[in-house]
Every structure is written in C-alpha cells, then in structure tokens.
Image 1 (cartoon, rainbow, N blue to C red):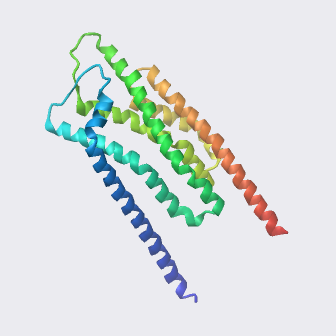
Image 2 (cartoon, rainbow, N blue to C red; image 1 turned 120 degrees about the horizontal axis):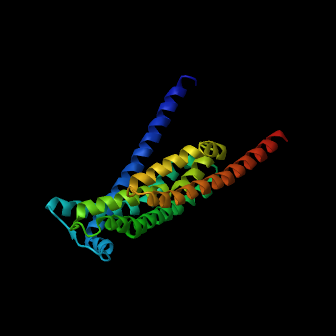
Image 3 (cartoon, helix red, strand yellow; image 1 turned 60 degrees about the horizontal axis):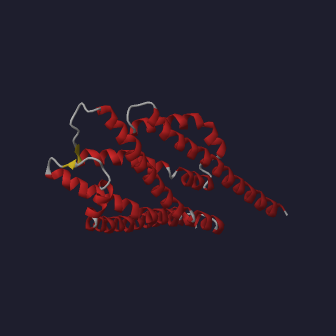
Length: 251
C-alpha cells in the first residue's frame, strides 16, 4: 500500500495540472471569441470614446490605426472574459471548499465583474473630466495641440486599467480571507504601506500635479478600508464556524 502512495500523489498532481491546462485553454478560446467580436464593433467602440472630445485625434502612421483596432477589441475581450476567468478559478479551487464556502465564493464572480466595470467607468470619468482638462490648461494657448490616437488611447488605458484592477480589491481580500491566506489583522498591520503603494500608483497614472493624485488615492484608500471591514466579517464567520465544528467534535 505504501509503495503506491507516491504514485497516487503523482497522478493527483498530473490530474490537477491537466485540469488547470484545460481551464486555461477554454479561457483563452473565449478571450479570442470576444476579441473577434470586438473587431466587428471596433468603429462603434471608437466613436463612443471619441464622440465628445473637443479636439480631433490624428493618426500619423498606419500602425497607429492597427494598434487602436487591437486596443478597442482587446478592451471588449478583457471585459467579456473576466466572468469566465473568475468562474474557472473558482471551479479549480472548489474541491477544497465546503458547500457553504462554494456558494458564498460563487457570488464573488458577478461582484468581480461589476467592480471591474465600475473601476473602468471611474477611470474614464477621471481621465475625461480631470486629467485631460488639466493638461490642456497647461497649454494656455502657447502651442497647437495635436493628439495622436496612439498616444491618447495608451494614456487612457494607463489611467483606467490600473483603477479597474484596484477596484477588485474588496472581493480579492474577501476570497483570500475565506481561504485563510490573509487576516484583518494582517491588513491593519500593513495599512500604512498599502496607503503608500496606493498613493504611488495614483501618482504614476495621473498628471504631475498635486491635487489629482490625491483625488485618485482617496477612493482607493476608502476601498482598502472597506476591504478590511469585509475581511473582518469573513474572518469572524470563519472563526465561528471553526468553533462550532470543534464543539461538535468534543461532544
């Protein structure tokens, strides 16, 4: 019996790796399906972002046009794939969860999607209402401003995507707390370092002024505090369930 145990463990590892590979393949296939859909509607997506601009975007090379096509289609592909990717991650770790943990963690999937969308919207509004107007005020009529589509959309993505990812923080924290990887006390202990990182990120993705990074970092810090509170709730329920289980065992 003992001689077969290492072999069984190897088979189990191979099975998990095979499952992970299959889930990654499915996710990649769906990503490319959404990418194709994005290409089909790329003009509509472009005009959605460009219709309210007070300036005209210019392409100085064919490569910039191609890049914008991929950027617009890629945006649709990323947004469309997030729910499936979240589900694949959940399904992969599901065997290690209790039935109740499975039900609770499954609810994280739509929350991840909507928080990502909320982060994109917040980043886009920040970009169009604060970042671009601030940069234009620096001109003050001194220069003829020309925005190329390549630079404009790269700058837009640089602002919106980090914020969209950071908006996932509360759900990620809840999930990691439910798995026992982090605790509320851990988050409190590292709070000042987290604040510093959030301020640095806010500074990197916004113009080099004093006000805008603060305006961006405030909601991110609030999200971190919300994450601590949610982590407390998950951790308390996890502890209560563990105590109840231990009491049943001792009877």
